[in-house]
Length: 252
Image (cartoon, rainbow, N blue to C red; front, top):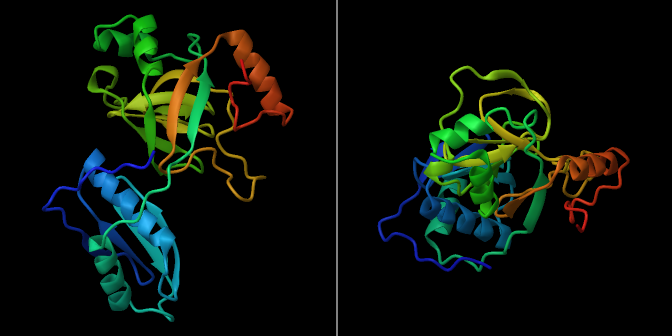
């Protein structure tokens, strides 16, 4: 459902130049649900339009939105004036994001950091996963890799700082937590987040022209634990191209 919370009365936004063909609207300087609510409402206003000629695209982050434009069609000053006014206007009704239930397996080879992470919070691995699986996360932004979604909503009890020495290779589709967030790596890469499982879900599909990334800003995610047999079955479906990203639990 769209959120109807009121914004802090003293909230202000700042326009920051970004090269000669982009600018950033900064609504704050930290990861905060109220600040991110302003980000979402500003994006909803952009989506509702109309937009000045020359605005090409925009992308939300934790506390800001960057817009790219054609400087031959609109000047920085004109666009800055437009977005400043838009940020102070009454926000349109937000579109509810999609809700996802995504499976993951926490077998030891998929979750090398789970035991230590649980111990830091005074929990057993089983209790940690039980609490983690009860949470509903919100997609704040995409970044780092195509389809890499930063999910907010992890309580401090279940979180920890990133690893002091990042891994040289994190396996593709690893589920990880760090700094009050969780995420899943669409592709194998270096990374310093703490690994607690792995999902068979296809997080990024370049063959899908309309929505290659499974998750989008504003979506909500709940992680569902599955056993190794279910993981392997869904992994086989993904490899054969039969995995339904709209029903990643396979209906079980």
